[in-house]
Image (cartoon, rainbow, N blue to C red; front, side, top):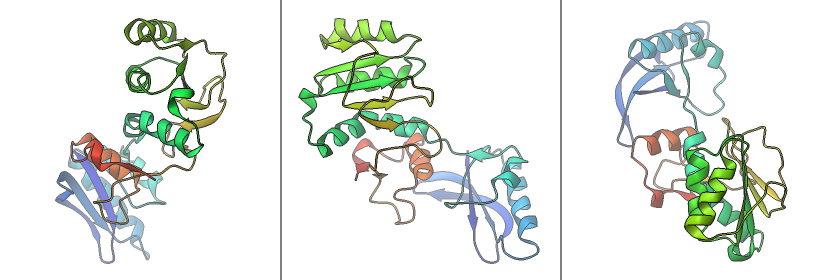
Amino acid sequence: MIGQLVTVPGGRGRAELGQLYGLNVLRGSADPAGFWGEHRLRRAGRELRRGGVRRVLTPRDFAWWPLLERFGLRPVEVDAFVRAQSAPLALELLERRGLAPDRATVALRGLRAGRDMARTAEQLCRRVRSLVVDAPQGGEELAAWLRREFGIPVLPPGEGCHVSLCFHPDCSRREGEALELYGPRPGLAGLILSAARLREEDREDLSVLSALWEGGKLRPGDIKIT
């Protein structure tokens, strides 16, 4: 189960079951203000961990992560959610730069040609002129499969491109516009992922979107790119 820590006046650090847009969460409420603020936060962290929680949603710009980490708690990762949107992000970026996808080259760059990269390549190969696959582990195999299955030109890693999709911070090259699909704050070249049906404070919160996506509470049609 995913935990949620909310900071509210008078919150004493107790945790109870709740729902977040239909997703079951264990919610701890704590007031971080004043002399007893850290004590209340520690109590919330302790109760969340005792409830079986390991990953926690927090308010944006939450400043007390070192305290929660003492209980083995960590943020909700956003990488899988962002990578699931990588093909639409690339196509949107091309459009905003005035480039027709059927005349553009998109590079997929990372250390390993894993499931996320393969899924993205399969989605893009029907829309773009050509791909570059730049991944030391499995890249040649993925390129060969794409050529065989879809007949799309797959260029070697050294070729240029219009958009680079970077699946790892140690990508070897970053020509053209780069979308950084990793880490707690992915670099999306000014693009924003959002879900309009959520409350305003949650619509663009990647951690909330990731938790709902993972829990099956967001469908592809719910996600907008602005």
